Length: 219
Image 1 (cartoon, rainbow, N blue to C red):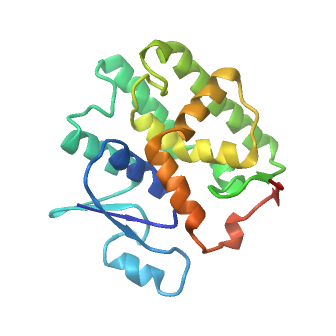
Image 2 (cartoon, one colour; image 1 turned 135 degrees about the vertical axis):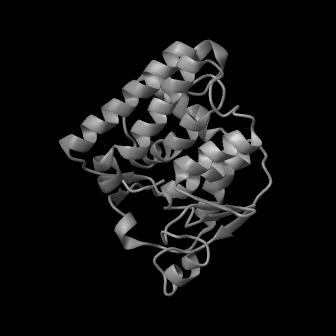
């Protein structure tokens, strides 16, 4: 099985299925393609029908789109355990995933993922409202499922994978959060798999100016 991903520092879509596979210890070959460099689309064409990342190649199957890959991995390799066991909670978890997958456009536009940076950034009212919505989602899930574990739905799930890039954005730009959300972000940053991703991102040398928004904060 091969997972084709982009730059770890910037590629939020790549992070999601990578985190799922790594967290649950599913064996896979990582194929990393540096995005927005000379010839990168030709390299992607070998794997991706959309010329985008991520793409999962598993035998004769090719799965693109981060959410589709995560659902496939959960069903094929994890016996569905990356989703809650109860049908109502599974539906709620999928609602979280779908809202993240299709929404929060202002956050995506104004707050690019940049794992190795700590920056100060002015955001619009639209982005601020979306940050507050994510804060509410984090707080609601943690309040409801806190007794089962430290992740959004207690045990680590697809929702944590889908929201991991938002966790990184909140960390990079110092977004103020409620107490429950702060605790959740701390839990995610302590996740072993996510820590490996962050370390790899910090070791990358490529700089993409379009993703380097904001003013660097001195350590």
